[in-house]
Length: 285
Length: 109
Image 1: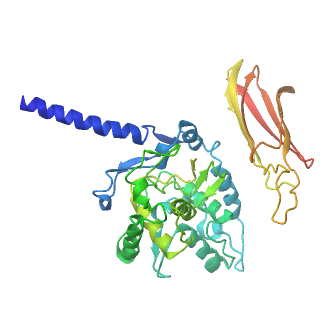
Image 2 (image 1 turned 45 degrees about the vertical axis):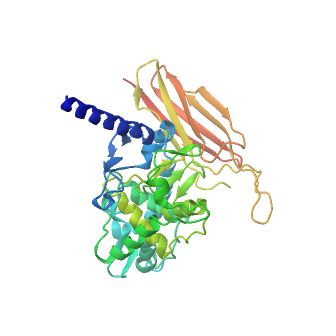
Image 3 (image 1 turned 135 degrees about the vertical axis):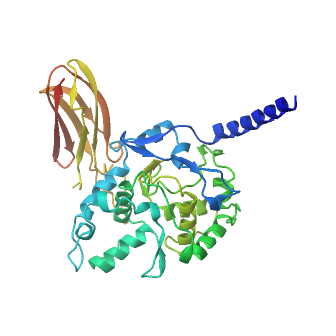
């Protein structure tokens, strides 16, 4: 009798979890071009203990039509940017007369494990760098070329190229050592309510992912798919530009792209996706 | 002048005789509508792809008139009957007079 009741209780608990699951994300699996398997669901990293049990890629929250666009490079408009970046990759620029390819060779071989570990600490410069900052540092220091600037089109294109060759690799951002303080600052920002609406990142992306925000499903706000081609503005979008959009929507004054606050936040949010696969350039609405 | 215009086409390498295949095409193009103004308030002249055609061994498969409301990087997906081995020829006509073409062979087997 007791055993039956217990079993009943477990079944009821499973139903509740199941119901939440149905609200949250679909059960589709993502394979790009029929060959690159993408991990869109993973056990949450240890530091998310008590916050999230499972992390999901934003792809799982999108409609079938939007999902399909990412499953084939021909249908993914972000891949046009990758093509543009391929030209830039092989173009010599700056006072040194060097191209990316002169040092790094074929991006498809040398860049596969890059996107997954950024943002990361740069020992020489003594600073935390995201991928865009690293690209610009390479341009100014190694090539003697002009910096592209954060979130500018050629920059996003190059970021898309470097992401695209790393698709399928597992995000593994370091959060200890020299970046521990910034990571802590990022976590604090994530849980701090801002703006007239008094919303923190967590209010939507942790407490309410899977629920509707107006006509749209909230995702967990994972950034493994960035840079992201958004159907709403028909172009590639950078992570920190997206942060700006989110903070603005809380009706707050936003931090600037490249500010120490957003660097810390990018590091923290990236680390929340540890275990998911690199997906960029992804397609979202 | 439109810049960085690159046509892309995907056609299966082979098909059974009489089979219906799916063709996907995309051309990167700004498709400037002519309705917008630049920072100084001057109209930006219209510059779009105004016609797209696909022929198979000289026989027309599809002939499309494009209008200014069509967005950047026009994408077409359509089906074609393949009665025999041959060549698909794709042609895009630009407002500025440029003509972009691409061809794809298809085998029977």
